[in-house]
Image (tube, rainbow, N blue to C red; front, side, top):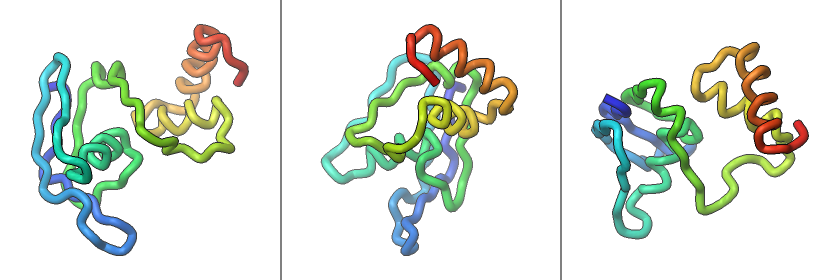
Length: 116
């Protein structure tokens, strides 16, 4: 198993259902999420990435999931975050310890030739 969602539910701040009882299992390989406009594709991806908080259920993934990529349609992070803060945010979502994230974001920033 690469990624598993079990009985995942997401609600808006007002309590309106965004995703309801989502159950998915993906193995290693390339996958696509298809659906009509407004069907919840972006909400599902944001939930998997930890941007949307789940109200019920669970999301589990293996270490290989850290190689997953997602390019949102719109900017989903506050524009005033520094590169360092973005790395810390992402590593927190992935459960990486702060001392490791400091080391890793410095390596990544050097590879990308950006100042943190």
